[in-house]
Image (tube, rainbow, N blue to C red; front, side, top):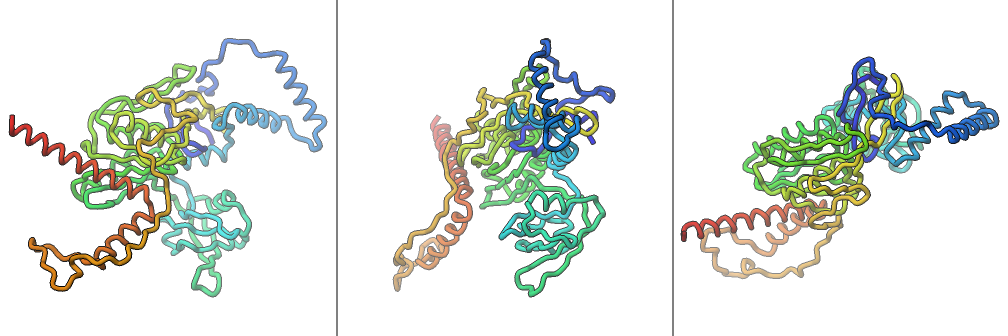
Length: 449
């Protein structure tokens, strides 16, 4: 059910997430939040609409009630505006809220379709599915006795969700098991993590943001603190690839974590309430360490706001490929207790006034995602392989051809898994090397002075 506080603005590439930017009082219907244009209704066009409505009502092959026809008319009117304006029924709005908060009642598994069967991609940590022992690669044959063969992904996910505390039985086929077996799981509240982090190399952190939920800003701050506890950070990769966007305020908070001041993003629309500015507050959590932001054609909306802000402020090097190019803002406006519309009300702009609508963010360094294989070196001999070779002299360990090959294969394995992250890490190391050399030069100049 829609609440009076459901007036919401969001900027996801799809109907993924929502952000409360404005509210209204309990008694307000929401109809006057966006001022109506002071023009008369087009009477002739309304007559045409009434004629079409009556023809469908009287002549369509099946009887359709007036309420349904009017609902179809609203849907068509919104769909004709742009790809992101739409009509929201109760189910659509529930999905919107679930994606916004990252919380829903269900099992906690990521699933896909393989050979016409629903297959477990991975069970999420600390969820009913993980506690029940589901594994990546498990095939879900039946759900509470009903076959899932040929069932679409969205329908399967909808069937797996349900009220907290309710149970569902999955019939699982698993490699290494001769016969399928049943697993009964009690649904619980599942929270989807939108932020993950790890250390890539000594002093270099990695921050992955999969989408912008309501808590993404605070989650990013917590992950940065965890990385800093691992040791002094020399640089960080911020991975926004395939991030469809989400909550506007969260994107501002994420950019703010890496900026000391300045404009992050501003919006412009026909109404005054749609024209807003968002700025960073003093304090860079990472104290100015080098940053590389990874984007691709799946990076949209809120992800493009972060990439654009850090690029405009010269705070980060943006790498990868051109982003999606969604630069519009949608507002969710309640119609009644069960229905709402999602209406495009503004365009957003980066600090330097760039509109990324239908253009996207262009990376500073273009790096395509590729599969890399190593050319054979021919098994060259090194000095360390020669019989009777001299020692290092400084106590360093000899590195013969076999040692070097193992090190190269390790790097190749790393590179082959994700060449874009590997290249981002190399850029960070290069930035640090240049900074150290520049600092030494300044120290020499200072001594001479």
